[in-house]
Amino acid sequence: MYDRIDLSWEATAVHRARVRGSLLGGALGDALGHPVEFLSLDGIRARYGEQGVTGLVPDSEGVVGRVTDDTQMTLFTAEGLRRAYARERDRGIGGGWSQLVREAYGHWFDTQRLPGPPEGATGLAARPWLYARRAPGNACLSGLAQDFVPDPAAPLGRPGPVNPDSKGCGAVMRSAPFGLTRVTADTAFAMAAHSAQTTHGHPTGYYSAGAFAAIVAHLVEGESLEGAVLRALRLLARHSGHEETTAALRAALDLAAGGPPSAERVRSLGEGWIGEEALAIAVYCALAEPDVRRALLLSVNHSGDSDSTGALCGNLLGARHGDHGLPADWLEHLEGRAEIAVAADDLAAECARG
View (tube, one colour):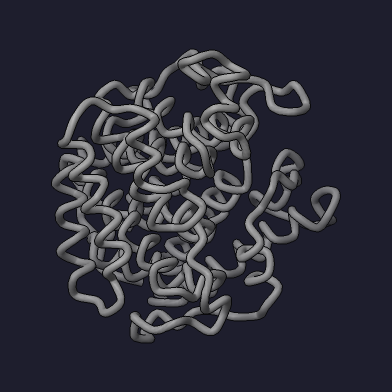
C-alpha cells in the first residue's frame, strides 16, 4: 500500500489508545449532536435551557446515545482500510486500498436500503444495529449509487466525475480512519481526498477530507492540534483549488486565538453543512475549549449540522488524548460502544503487524 511509520512497543500501545479514542470520540460527538441536528441555536436553548444540551439527550424516539451515518460510514472506512492492510500483508500486494474502501462503502449503502443483514454477510455488514437510516447525506447516497472507484494516482485539484459540485460534509465526516493507519500525513491526505471523490467531486469537498485526515495523522504522532492544523495548511498550499479549505482553517485558528469560546463565535464559521465549515467548526471547538467535555458540547450547540461537527470534534479530541480522555459516563450510554472499540482495536492491530 504505502510506507508506514514504524512504532516501538510503547508507541504501539499509545497508537491503539488514540485510534480507539478517535473512533469512540467521534461517535460520542455524533450521538450528542444527533437529537439537535436540525434545530437552530435558539431552538436548542428553548428546549434544553440557556446552556443548550449539557450531555447525551434522547432523540425523537426517546433513545439516548444513538449514532448516525457519520459514525456508520467512519466505521466502514476503518473496515475497508483494515482489510486493505490485511491483504497487503497476506498476499504481498501493494495498492488496491481504494477498491476495498469503495467496497466497504457499498456495504454501508446496503445498510441504508435493506432491513437487516443479508445471508452470508460478514464484518460490519453482519451487524443488525448498523441497519438504521438516520438522515444520510444525499451526496453519499447518490454517489454510491454509481459504480465509481477513485484512482489514487489521478491528480487532485479538478472536479471529480461524481457529484462534481458537491462539497457537503459527507466526505470529511467519514475520513478520520485515513489518519489513524500509521501512514504519513501527506499519504493520509492523499488517500482521504481521493476516496472522498467516490461521493463528493468538488475540490473543497475532498480537500476538507484530506486536510482532516492529515490533522488526525499529526495528532496520532503526538503533535499539538494547532501544530497539526498549521502543518495541514502547508500541505494544502501545494494543491490547486485549496483556497476555500485553507480560508476556513485559518478562520478557525484566528477565532480560537481571539477570545473565550461561545456558540455565537461558532456561528461565524458557518453551520457545518459543507465540508470546510464542518472542519473549521470542529477545529475551533477543539482548540478554543481545552476541556474535552465542554469542547464536545460547544461543537454541537449551534445552528447547523450538529452531529457532523460533533463527530469531527470528537475524532480530533480522541486522537489527541486517547480513549482514556473521553467522558466515561457518556461512553456508558453510547450505541455500539463495544463494537466501535473492537473495530478500532482491529484497525490498530492490523496496522501494527506491518
